[in-house]
Image (tube, rainbow, N blue to C red):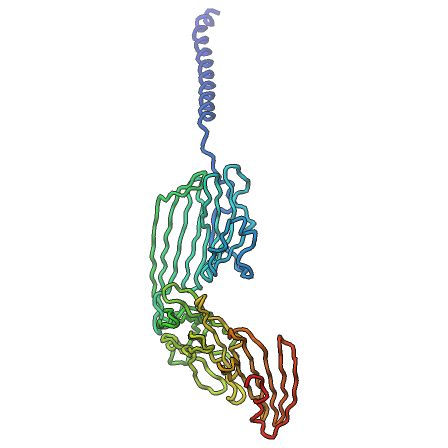
Length: 441
């Protein structure tokens, strides 16, 4: 009992210390919670962003070119239709930028197509004080000279944009070289999505390969012609070709398959003419790669086993004061029938457009009669003729006359708006004079 009394003060001290410690611990917790309540951390939209990474590969590949915009785009984007370029297209997206709506700020996503093949995915930010756009992804070029933009919301305050430009820098018979320039820009963003640049890094990669390098076997690349001027435009031809080992195994020349051909402005690379190779009756492959370096396009005529160059066959075909292009597409009927497709120059858009009515077999244009004539031989004393009579604007069709001449018999038809309005059967002693029956003589 005396021992217990002797140690009692120490026991009281221990109990008192424990109580004070627990009291201090609770007080510290209360103070800490009080600090959090009085100075909360800044809110962030980061967790609500649905697609934090945007890549050019995810852009739609089936962009609808039937309409440049609709009332939906005009209203949502406040488009001024008087200021929209001829090559601009707009399409609203149903994708949501944030998984939850916010009262202080709103967003919408849309696509914009420009410059023939440049497609952008754009975020429009709407705040009470301003409206502005942020490009989320972009892709342009033709596969050989390309430029892209990709972006990433890294965290609740960092946004990165990567611009990449890949360009073919050398194209000749023996060497291919390409360069890749990349610019990575880092921004700091806030709750209002203001972007403040804090860092920029740039990189350049240059690589040269022989034209027949093993890495190029079975792959396509670009070949450019020498620049030239037509209708006041400084331009050049661009050919997309493919090198294969099989067609070069026994050839002293470097042979390639032609996959595509475009006429572009020399500086801006704007497409002026996109040749439709499906219009050609026979395949022009393989061709000598060196022939493409000097503004030439070599086609092989299977029937004659000869080579023709028609890329520079430019003349004022419709006599409107501007040069046009025609391309040889077919030879048949024992060499009597030679067919062409024609691209007429549009002086307003400054491009060359495929003209169906100025394309055909053995075609000629009579400016006095404002009439396009074509003919073809089907057999011995068997010929087909067509006369397309144009309206004064030299673009629209007034009426068409056709004739099938077999021996000394002519079967004639007049067609207006695709309807046959007149038929004749003419038998002549001298069939060479039958054209006097045409309306425009």
